Length: 189
Image (cartoon, rainbow, N blue to C red; front, side, top):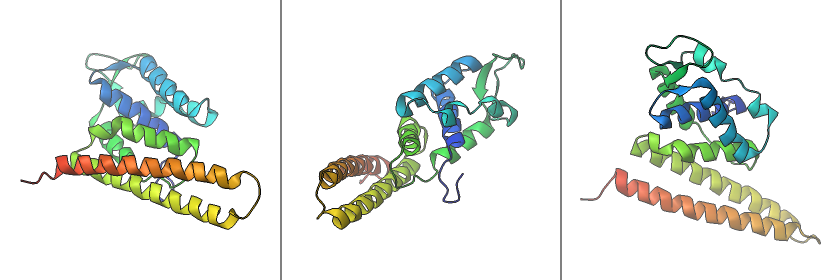
């Protein structure tokens, strides 16, 4: 992880692979898991050597995934998520999100939403709170940029207004999701 407890590209790949295996509820052949993870990530970010060049082999060597019962360590064995892998998945899912807009951040947020339901409700609430905080920080950053360039001619102000509108809509959606999750996690009698 980066010093601010956010995910590196390598950890985003790990999150995608471990979460994909957790969602399957059954063993997956290594080649199927690798294809599924790469397919998902490339559809979110487009082709990226930084992401696609990361090997999933380390997941086996680190004991995060292991051949399913009765399988050996052949190259394309059916793999299961280990308990250590479940712990790593939870750690990756609960990492912070940076308040910036880039392809890696978009991938991490998309992965969080794909696998968020794997966390206990209270932790889901915490994660959505964190995403709300990141959206508010992005609104502040973009608002400051707009305020400092609003007197310029050209199209920058209109573009920033467009971005601000998108972030405001995202924040509104996140707050609605947060409210729904809080009602489920902490029902009022």
